[in-house]
Image 1 (spheres, rainbow, N blue to C red):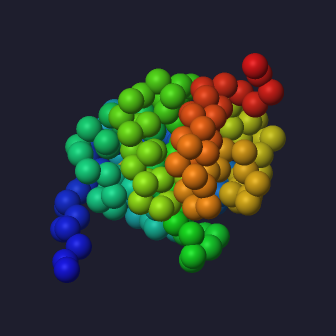
Image 2: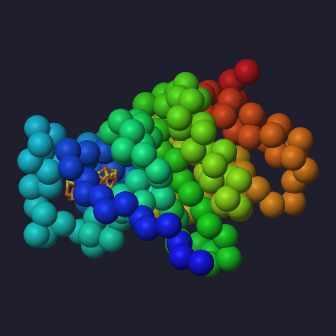
Amino acid sequence: MHEPAKPARTCGTCTLCCKAVGVHALAKPAGVWCPHCDRRGGGCAIYGDRPGECRTFSCAWLDGLLPEDRDRPDRLKVVLFEDSSESASERIIVFVEAHAGAVNGNARAQFLLRRFLDQGCTVVVRNADYVERHRAGEIPLRDRIAADDPMRVRPQSRSPEAHRKHLELLVQRAAKPPGTA
Ligand code: SF4
Ligand code: SF4
């Protein structure tokens, strides 16, 4: 059986990963606009010399993993990408919020989150608090997704009810800094 064809896409006017995602080579934390990004539509001002991390990065929308044009990150306000740095046996999809509540207050983002879990992926939500701590230097630039990351939810080994409860907790945590009631 053939896989459904992935839509051919280009970034267009979206530049959100140049803010949401950290770039180690530029010492640019997550959540800060890259100084080389022309937000008036000019794109990357150092395109020919941009770091390897930027050359190899593509988000889940560009990769055709999200079905609709409204899922483009600048429209969704969340950058989703597949983290392939850790384990070949586990597909990890990372959601990075562009602003506080971008996952919790967004029915479409929650739909996509559940969809990836239903597909057997592990989902990690990098909420606005995480991004702020990354920006403040409390989290190293080369952040790894730890096995006990509190914002990580695996679909395996859970009853549907436990799965649903964990997902609700995850969505609540995405809306609140850790430690708040
Ligand atoms: S977030 Fe995705 S669509 Fe937007 S600029 Fe980055 S790779 Fe392109
Ligand atoms: S160097 Fe270019 S591609 Fe990389 S984050 Fe900056 S503006 Fe974006």
